Image (cartoon, rainbow, N blue to C red):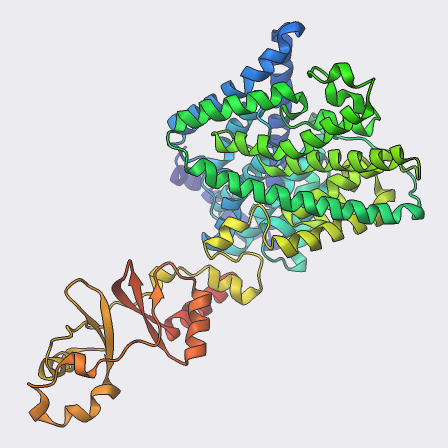
Amino acid sequence: MPKSTVHRILRPLLLWRLRHVSDRVYLILVATLVGALAGLAAVILKNAVHWGQQALYGWVPEQNRVFALFLYPIIGIGLTVLYARYFLGGNLGRGIGPIIYSVARQGSIVPRSKMYSQMISSLITVTFGGSAGLEAPISVTGSAIGSNVSRVLRVSRRERRLLLGCGAAAGVAAIFNSPIAGVLFAVEVVLSELSAPFFIPLLISSATATVVSKLLFSGQPFVLITTSWGIDTIPFYLVLGLGTAMLSVYMIRVYFASEKWFDRWPGTFRKVALGGIALGILVFLFPPLYGEGYDIVQALLSGESQRLTDASIFSVYRDENMWVLLLVAAAVMLLKVFATCITIGAGGNGGMFGSSLFSGALLGFFVARLINMSGLFVVPEVHFVVLGMAGTLAGVVHAPLTAIFLIAEITGGYALFVPLMFVTSISYLITKYFEPYSVYTRKLVQRGVYVHADRDRGLLAQLVLPRLVQNDFEPVHPDATLGELVDIFRHATRNLFPVVDEDGALVGIVSLDDMRDALFDEGKYATTRVRDLMVEPPATVNIDDTLLDTLRCMEQLDVWALPVLKNGRYVGFLLKSVILANYRYQLIRENE
């Protein structure tokens, strides 16, 4: 249905709302609607993946299942690429990064296609064994629902941003049955800042999605019941925190290195074939890499670590040598990020959220089992499994509060709050030292989008430099005479002139102050050339530079204008007054 038709149908209802319902109550009602829709979307996706995987497993005889696990990921990635190409025009837009960008630069407007494209593509990918998580696609779907519902129901720009966050929070809350973690995820990851009154809509949206999930979904992905922890295990928690930090840095760097590597690969279907084969080989050797892997995490929490080698070539050794099990756990932990990167790079859809939880759980098990095998000390392995999940998630996503409450809510491990604080804070601080930006924001920062910085930097990041360039400065040729320059000056609206050669390159600038003395000597009008009067600009601005760096440069040089170049050619001037005026306009819009 066209958007104009929807607005026409809803117009009487919206007018009635303006007369009878306050803005605050209306925002609560819309947040509830967004939470219900996002929660329903999460339940549909989660159940569809579960049923699809069961069907694929049951369709193949058990003796041939290992070969099916090799072929399924190739089929899934291929179908995802075909769907993206022929139904989305090749523009799938994976990950939460585009959502954060829309909040920072596009007024929280998310394309309507995101309300279904992420669900369908991730459903295909993960059902067929793509080694990635569903959390990012669900969060994007919820964000798109929040953004588009707010546009249809005509809420303000600021409230649209909030409702986008409500959708993201609802998606995470529904998939894990963790309302508080959903709210914190929206605050820490998606929204750059949040005022206290906005917490109520976020909480209501997240709680609504959790209720929908409880009604329609089978329950939490993990279960852990614990009542205490030993204070004498704190040194080991600190070691685990260091380990999760190292794993987080490793995963972030591998993720972005592989992304560059896949970008250099020519041919879409070559990526599908080679990437699918590589992923199939990994899954063939290490079956836990198939799909999200949450069944392995639950097995570790249930004390069934031997399932790590089920259906693999290493299964014959697991009862004979405990070191084989540990080596398999270490290999799967380190290879999970490669499997996820191959899944995404070859054309599938998914995210690093679930992969972080999976690898962190294996790290926790690995560390705890090593300590117990030493015979010097005995630690509860299930505690280390959930602490490893929290520490790795905090490092990879740069969201320690989300990690703490998510693990506490989905495992029932509220008694582990203090160890969770130790491990996540250590992991977050160390990871942030080596990798200042998360797996979601690093690419945005490279593009000059500082989404989680201070308010001034965030507002400046929303301004686009090319739109602020002033091109009403009259260019002059370096061989023009002073007399010709005077004629140009009589009709000009500016007292600054760029000196540009035949190729469009900037060779200097001339200001009224530079030519003041020569103006009163008409004898020099024919003999003096512009090149004799021009000076080099104090600095130049590239069209791709950030406004923050440009404004800082202007302050250091104490200038009010700088020439702007594109591919070495002059395009105009950037004025400090224009930057500040647009900054003020942006500030007013943000506070509407």
